[in-house]
Image 1: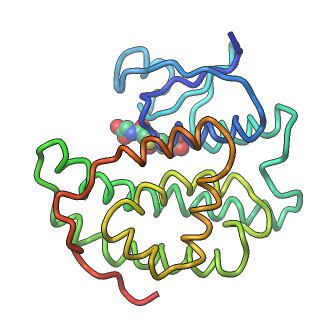
Image 2: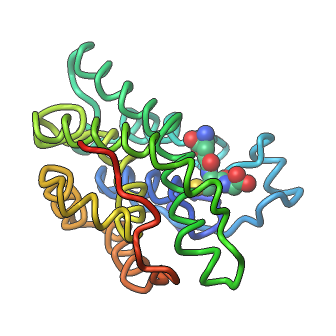
Length: 226
Ligand SMILES: N[C@@H](CCC(=O)N[C@@H](CS)C(=O)NCC(=O)O)C(=O)O
């Protein structure tokens, strides 16, 4: 049994980010399910989020802390830039994903694809309100990925790993598809990231292939110009 254990509900974008970081380092690990909000979960993560990393007696939560720990405590290809300016760029983009991308993109994808597939009405007010913040996010992503092949610069870093599950599942919505059709650098990045080797990328690709289609396939709105 490898010592690293990811504790999480299985379908969690942040779990996939943490596991992908472990894959990129070439680490062995296992995943054990954790019920959201259970006493066991709250004992490991008092703020009640997923995932949690257990490495022997060490228990860590917050995905950025987990990824930095995996990168710095273990051998394997570095996942952070070597220079302070490079690391600042990486942290800037991870901050953008955590503060702006995840709350809008992840919820948009759930309202657009998951809730209707489960028989619930989507929150149409949220879908309408997401247009402008998504426009800013997607414009900035396309600008960054037009300037360099990876999100934080020339090299693949944790910033790419944070963004991948977010953009990948947003791209399955009709609005995400329409964005990809007119954002060649973002579409190229998504293709390259989805082709990386590793069990977590394969897992995400499989989940994406089986994902529900939009119950209302017409565009809820057109994005503002890039
Ligand atoms: N700041 C946390 C955020 C983690 C997070 O939001 N995880 C989601 C799953 S992808 C979660 O726990 N959702 C359950 C909930 O919010 O109740 C981190 O970086 O680990």
